[in-house]
Image 1 (cartoon, helix red, strand yellow):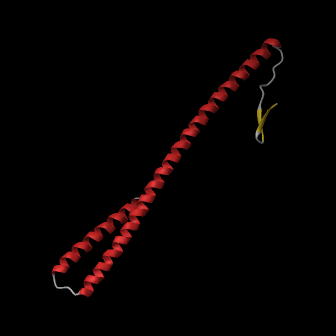
Image 2 (cartoon, rainbow, N blue to C red):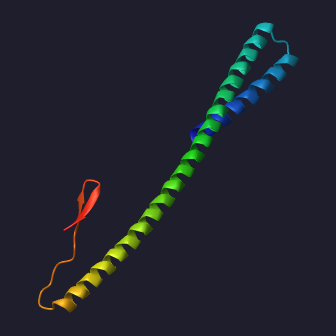
Image 3 (spheres, one colour):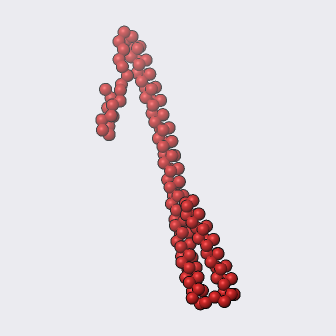
Length: 126
């Protein structure tokens, strides 16, 4: 985007210089051949300026879209982290309750808390 802005500025300056040059030379005695060449150059620079301005606008729009998408993903990630933390707290509380009940029913034996093992898309308790 910065490069396009710089190129846009340079083309705009060149276009102004050429326009001023054409106006200054039209007052002097310049052949129609030189005027024609200058007019062609002005048309070419205007065309390049318009293309660059269009590319700059497209880059600006795309940049804004990417920023919005990034914000959405960040928000979704934060939501998922919060949900994960809640689930971890619930699991820890459940494990603590299970250990307390085991300790009350048989204080001499201790069973390990259930472990979650991934099984493709399902989780099983062992």
